[in-house]
Amino acid sequence: MQIHLTTLRTWDREGKIRCVRMQNNFLRIPESEINRILGIKKGRISCIYARVSSNGQKEDL
Image (cartoon, rainbow, N blue to C red; front, side):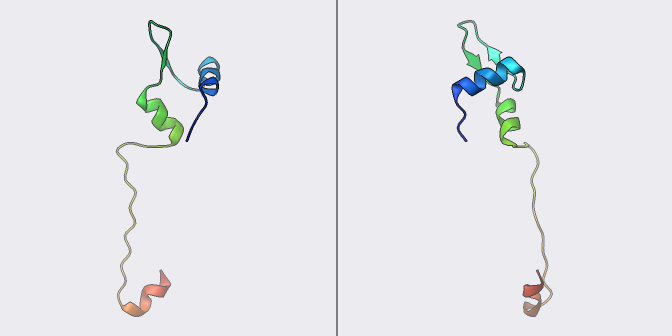
């Protein structure tokens, strides 16, 4: 996913994203904000477990 710099500046101005402004006026975006935008939740793993009693029941999954 690519987001244009102008969009990031707009989101910062509107408060949609939390940025840290450095002494040289550069914007830094914390990793937590990037993960929030991308929908990444740290520490959570999703998994699916399926058990088939016999080879003939595979189609029922």
